[in-house]
Length: 146
Image 1 (cartoon, helix red, strand yellow):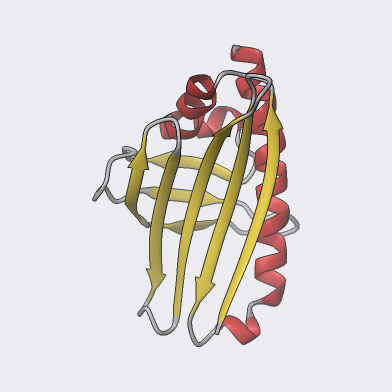
Image 2 (image 1 turned 90 degrees about the horizontal axis):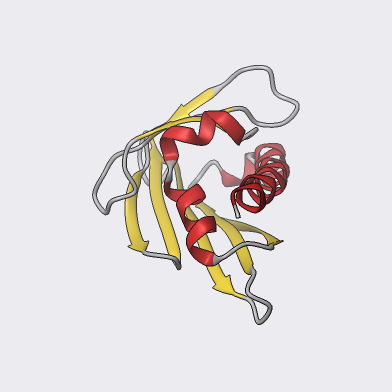
């Protein structure tokens, strides 16, 4: 079974500024309400350590995905599994598109799969809410830098 979520935000900042905020993982703790700490480099093949706080959940989770795509000022993607790809897998993507007005349309997308998906509805809803909170904070961060 598969499931996807996708959120969008328009950011009034140059694409390179938005990109720098997205890939500066060490600074996520300064502004990000969803991925509250990130370690690693936005380089293909690098394993990341992401400490996450889903909305309306008290416990934190640590995930260790691997960076799979880096296209400067355009796309960052990572993928991870829990226990085994057939149990639970996820692919996260940030996609930046230049707007006609000089701003950026940022899309966050997550594709989930695995045998546990029929039981993961609440988790996916909280992740989508976390993306929306993160998008709003990213917008504030990038626009304040620009």
